[in-house]
Length: 164
Image (tube, rainbow, N blue to C red; front, side, top):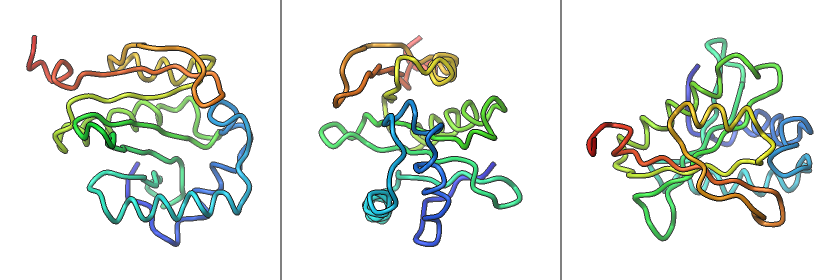
């Protein structure tokens, strides 16, 4: 599995994820229409140009798009960042989520980020399992922008063992 920041030619891989009702069921509760996806994608490309972190196309050795991953520093506190991922259903249950989360943690540490958080649907047991296996802990559950949400957090210094 390889990561590379999204570029203009990658829109179709991104759209395959966000237009998939199964993928988006526990993210936005709806598939995203093409024009809205294009607007989001252009914003992602702009962010990718300005940051060492960003939005990533995750693909197989054969070059096929498998997933989306993000590592986005918090605007108010750049030592804190959000991670996220979306995986095509045909790749669910194959360890892709765990691999992506591990890779994002390593990338965050290399970027000097001290803590990570992820926002999930509380009903998404698979994402919670992926994150808790990486030592994320649930810190909040409630209404998140009008949808059910749960925030899980990870202190990277503790992950590295600096404070143990």
